[in-house]
Image (tube, rainbow, N blue to C red; front, side):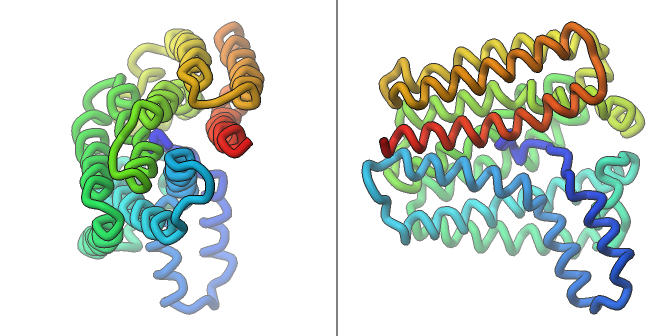
Length: 315
């Protein structure tokens, strides 16, 4: 959500609006402007999807109405640690971000925030989140911190600049939010939670590679070995189609395992079929517009699939 997902890398439709806001309101106070800069560092839209998936995991973990105190504490803690990971990602990639049109507006890329300010901000968020998650249960805290390390260090520092399979390998950390939510409610991790992780893990490559297709020039300019840069457009489109097929099969597992019923199955088949249609069309004939459409649909796909799982749970 990935975590992708993480923290999964996502194009922010609000990026132009953020830039224009900074220039359209020169009379705004410096303090308000600085608060907004720190807020932007947290990649709020990405973090919202992460917390949404974690909350779904919490609600699915228990029958009936969950303990709302635990849900609130866990949601806040996961939000804070995920926001810290996003800020740390901006710190590590400030030079790369500055060379990419998609990310050049970030405060770290523009030099609006210093490295020390960003590091302290990330550290405070991570510490506060860890305290809240410890109050929930130690397992959730340690799993969330492991996810932080997986995204901020393993993916951002080690994998992303080194291999075109960075999204596939690093997607494990972005797929963890439902497991974190499940652990928060039950104090353990069950097979059902791992099924949710698997769905996000398999969803991450077609989601991100659709973005990478129409941002290939950006990634090449930044020196990042994303799949369209290293293996070309045609190969990437084939991989999107193949992974979407695997995703379709993975999305049926909750029904096969007995975790969900016919309502979820109908939603999974419908949502997955349209994702396959988009992936097939993209494979047959590329256009930037279709790649953008596939990327945007992938976000709606995951949100609606998990919402259907939750609805089925209560039905």
